[in-house]
Image (cartoon, rainbow, N blue to C red; front, side):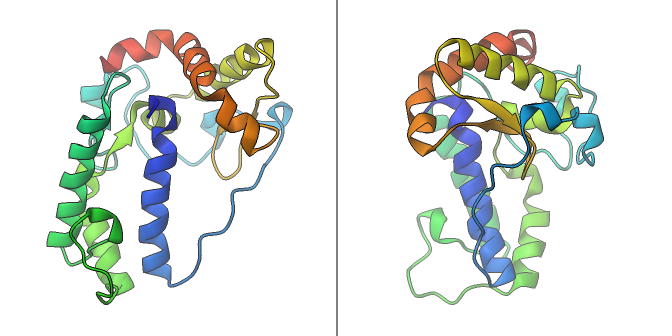
Length: 198
């Protein structure tokens, strides 16, 4: 798994918990606005108060859990996920993703899920790129640089703002083909920031 795709795995995990908490289905991601319409991250509501220049260890606060470094391997990521899911289970909110919850078990109440997520917030795995999205006021500009890099390599990449600032492609096929190229372009655009997470 490439590190820039880690947010998708974690987003899927969060969606599973959100569906359990809300009793509904997660809606599809929308394309959102074009890169010309994207403001800087400062216009979005801040969810973390850590300074953008802080290294990863200093950026971790109550709303940022275990940070997945750019060079983290899949086993390390799975270990972080196991710790998080065990915490959720221990706090009364087992998930089908935790590897130990049996099929057919009743779903926990929304209140239990919310309480467990709050109790385990400091253990929730979060990619370094997600930390950047939440803390770096230059995130949108750096993401635009990555999109320009991808365009030079033949992809119709752009930055969209909905449901969050992220790279978007013409279709899912292009998204899948972009994998390694996207990683390289993100590495290039975020080169100085990546150093703080190693």
